[in-house]
Structure formats: structure tokens, C-alpha cells
Amino acid sequence: YWPETSLKLPWRKPFTRRSPGRTVECGEWKVEGREKREVSVLLLRKAWPLRGSGALSKVVSMTPRSQTKRLTEAEYLTQERAASFKSEFFDGEMFAMAGGSPRHSLIAGNLIRALGNRLEGRGCLTFTSDLRVKIEMTGLNTYPDVTVVCGELRFADAEQDTLVNPTLVAEVLSDATEGYDRGEKFEHYRRIASLQAYLLVSQRKPSLELFLRNDAGQWLLREAAGLEASLEIPPLKIT
Image 1 (cartoon, rainbow, N blue to C red):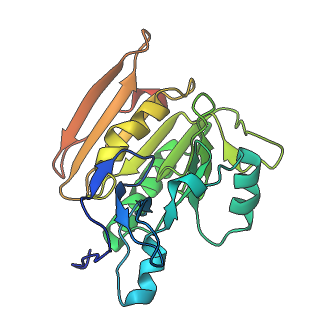
Image 2 (image 1 turned 30 degrees about the vertical axis):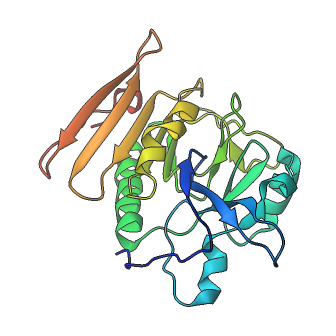
């Protein structure tokens, strides 16, 4: 599903640092014959096939750090609502999100259908990755692969397109995002007061990992593996 590719960029001594939803690699870049300066190369949240030099601009943004303009959330939302593609927002920066692989899309679609069927008539709604979710305590705006809300829907503003009270969020893991989904993104999700369950779905094998918040605020793991396995989701009262 992911084509083999390589990036040949004019830097030296690259290294990696954390970032919300993407990898940041830094190095030295010579700009129009002037002195070399540090630049950030922001790789998108999911790999895009690269074909020819024109595709490179879709995947990387090369901007000197000192010239990066921080956006307000209002500025982000204005741009996001007019854009033809989705971007995450955190700490004044937007991070473009590429489309998932066919396998990723199939698994997410199957999960949405299964949850929607089981939750019918139970007062819960299931949403696709088109719904933006804001973590109010950290400021992250993101698009979970699957979101479930039980009870009243709460939104960040009058536009009612940014949810703030999910009951369950689910992410389909991929090589490009697994570390982020398990680590930093989960740290953000844990700050959502309404969130009771976080579900991780593997693409490589039939495997589910469900993190549940208990009454003490601790997150406990339940797992299911194999095509015949089942997994109870107590906050939704389904299996």
C-alpha cells in the first residue's frame, strides 16, 4: 500500500524531534547562496506517494524557524473551514493531513459501520474523520479516525463543527502515525473530561487495544486479538 520512495534534500546532519502529528527533521540548508541556516522540514502526518519534483511540495514545507508565523485559533479555523484538505492545529501551527491508504480507509469504514449498527437506538452517535475534535485543555484541534458521542453534543463555537465532548475516539494505526497515536496524541486525549475510551486498531493483524478510564481517573488496557475475538466496551454498553 505504501510505495517505496526516498527524499533527497539538501541538508546535513539531520535529526528528529517530536511534533504533533508529524516528524520534524532539522539540518543545514543553503538558501540562494547566502549563509546556511536552520530550517524545519515538516513531513505530513501520513506518507504521500512521491512522483517527480512537483510532489515534493505536497509533503514538505521548508521555512526558517525564525520566520514561522504563529496563528491564533481563530485564524486557523478561518483557513481550515475554507480549505479543501484537513489540517491539525496545535501551539499556533497548522499541520496538513494526507489521505490514508486503502487498507486504512477500509478498516476505519468497517469500524464506523460496526459501531453505528450496535449503537443504534442507544443515544450515541458515530462520526467519521471529517469531524474535528478540540482538546480544550491543550488546544489541539484534530480529526480522529472515529468518534463516538453519547448524550448531548457539545461544540467549541456557534459553527458547531468542532466537537469537545467525545465519549470514545479510535485511531487506525499506521507506520507513520503509530508512535504519535500511542504517545503524544493519547496524552492530549486523556485531558478530555468526557472521554471514557480510546481504541487503537492495528492494520497489520486483527488486533484491538482499548484503554478505559476508571473511576479513579486511571487508564486500563483491554486487548483482543484474532478474527474470532470480541471486546466489550463498557462506556458504550456494547461488545
